[in-house]
Length: 164
Image (cartoon, rainbow, N blue to C red; front, top):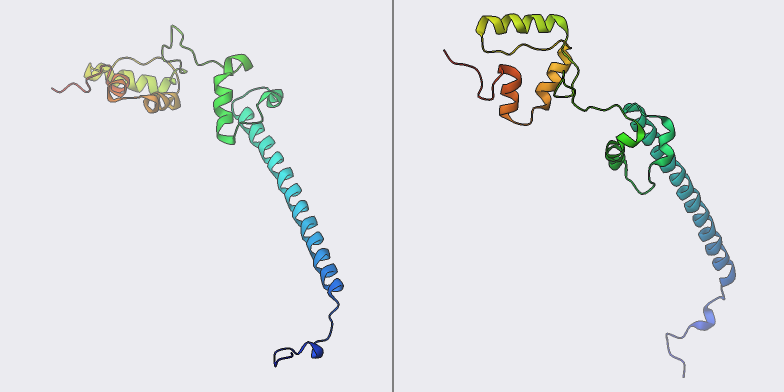
């Protein structure tokens, strides 16, 4: 028995196959664009990693061939740590101590040494400084790990300046 809602006789049949074809075609185009974007991203990431490794190796003064030895699973932050850990294997410049320079830093330059020695002679509380550069003196100050080390560098004793 027909009711008021049964108006199928007025519905025109739609061509469902053409709508599905258009939808499938749009899906294929979207997949192609996505794959192209993913391939481009992978290529950019590869180039960026290679550049990061190259820059880090160049910064540390190592042979560029070492880039082939860096593990693939290291992130960008770990590359520097890896190179530092294996610096002796790669032939990196060593910062080990020498008898003339117990802290392993290069000496301070002459004008700075002269002025510091004159100040030390005047006050009597500053230890003489070995020849080297002002930048190295600043590096020694910056490398101090605690107050005692800083006082030892600046005043020649771990306590600090002598009060008169």
